[in-house]
Length: 51
Image (cartoon, rainbow, N blue to C red):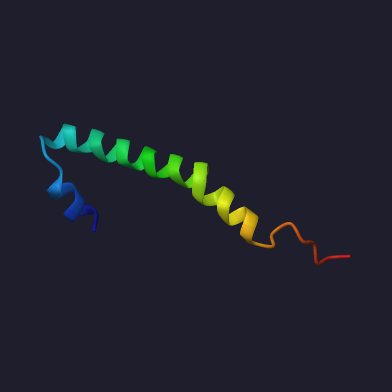
């Protein structure tokens, strides 16, 4: 999967590495900004079961 992504990106090897790092940073921002807060609202992770 990663090699297919790396082959599809334009540019030389260093440009591809920079593009992959930018994509990785964007995915992390997306997860922490929207996905994890949404999941925290919908999952019962704040309920304690230990008395």
